[in-house]
Length: 367
Image (tube, rainbow, N blue to C red; front, side, top):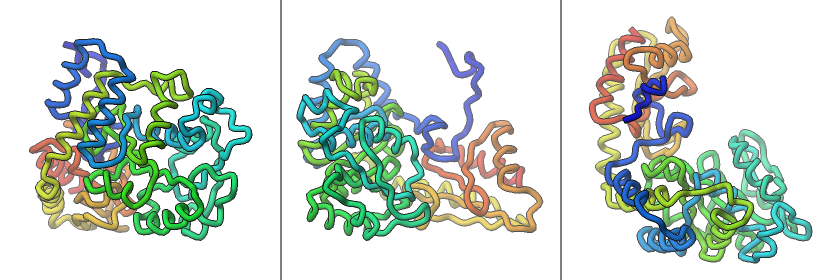
């Protein structure tokens, strides 16, 4: 059996979180088995997409759901949906949007340039509002014009409280709202609450908190808008043809969502808190080090997940980049994330027992 080592790639302990460039998350055995079963037969991919969407919408409790090839793809297809609706002539014309409403209001606080590029690739024109530090509801509303196809809300740097304000205004203006909630699971309530608030389309990653295939995303929302996203995607001859999701990944994500919804969220958070607390406690007595567990007001999403923050004050002999590199190059190699004042360790991606290894190695590096 081929392994990472056969390819000359060295696996590591992931204390950095569900980062795409680090492999997302690890799928449960049940998801892998569902994918293995799906790989053994042929199906009509369009029918599978439709049936999987119906199953997901029933399980989650939303009008409609669609599986994209990642959250960024979900955002791109959501933009296409707002440009074309289910009109097949308009779908065939993209990225040409002559005569269509094609402006997307987006806050400068959103750093995900690949999402911005994706919107432009399907024919959207970005209308930037606010600053890189802050965007107000007034900024967003002030950008709306007769040419507006949708408002884009990045849940993270932009809050859920602001989204409620924005949705009140976009509904008055008859303008759709797309929400980028890629890393905002848990809480599981986000799967339904954001749509219930009035968002038309919400994109989540399938390979982060849900622990499905990394090359999947989940788009939920209004039935007509979700259907329009599907018609703009693979395997249709549309602008999203290259955003293919295989039969294995479709089935795998459905299985992952079923497991995700069945899991006890409170128990999951308690376990992450235990892991983070053990790491924090291992820093006791180290000079120039301040360690704490945070589960709100964080630098990483989702804000609800407890993480260990290791802050280095000005008197400490190493900087955070040296610490990160020593952990990465050690044995075993460990990936942690940079924070403003030092580093953070995210237990969401730690396997059972790895928190002890991280704690030991951190103390060795920081002592």
